[in-house]
Image (cartoon, rainbow, N blue to C red; front, top):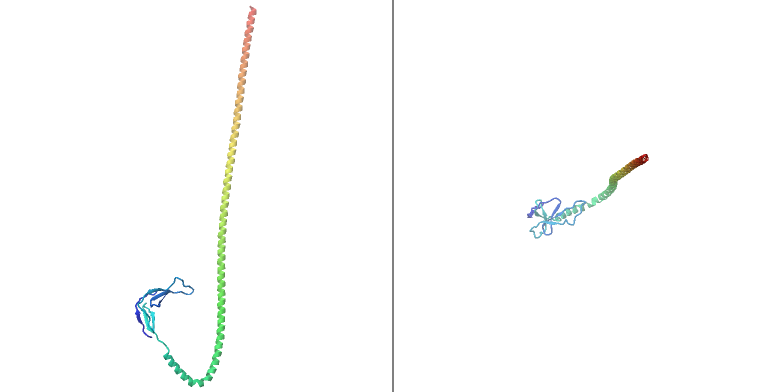
Length: 258
C-alpha cells in the first residue's frame, strides 16, 4: 500500500452526527448525517469548516481527510497489467486441457444444475416459510398494537365518561344545594313575614280591645257620674222645694194664727 503524504494541516476535530469531506474547491466541508427513518431538512445545507490553499487536485492522486483532521493524498493504484498476464497463462493451460475436460464439464454441469435446482427449491421453500413467519408475526404485532390502541381508547373514553359523570353529579349536587338553600331561605322569610303579620294583628286587636274596654269604662263612668250629679241635683231641688214649701206653710200658719 502506498504511503500517504500530508498536503494541508487543517487540524479539524470531528463531531458526532457530521460527515466531513473535501468539496470541489478542495476545502474541508461537512454535512449533517441522516439516520434511518429520518428526513433531511431544507435548512441542513453543507458548510465549509476550513479553507485550504490547494488550488487543484493532481491526477492519479486520491485526496482525503486523515485521522488527525488534516488533508492528505495517496497515489492511486490502477489495476490491469498484472491481471492480464495472469489471465493469459490460464487461457494457455485451459486450451491444453480442454479436450479431456469436456465430458467431465458436461457431467459436472448437469450435477451442478441439479444441485442449483435443489438449492433454489430449498431456498424458495425457506423464503416462503420465512415470509409466512414474518407475515404472521407482523399480523400478530399489528393485532396486538390494534388491541392496545383500542384498550387505550376505551380507557380514555371511560376516564372521560367518569370525569363527565363526576362533573354532572357535582353540578347537580351544587344546583340541588342552591335550590334547597333558596327554598329554605324563602320558607324562613315567609314564616318570618307570617309571624310578623300575626304578631302585628294580635297587637292591633289587643289595642282595639283595650281601647274599646277603656272607652266603655269611661262611658260607664261618665254615665254613672252624670246619674249621680242628676240625682244630687234632683235631691237638692226636692230638698229646697220642701224647705220652701215648709216655710210657706209655716208663714201661712203664722198669719192665720195672728
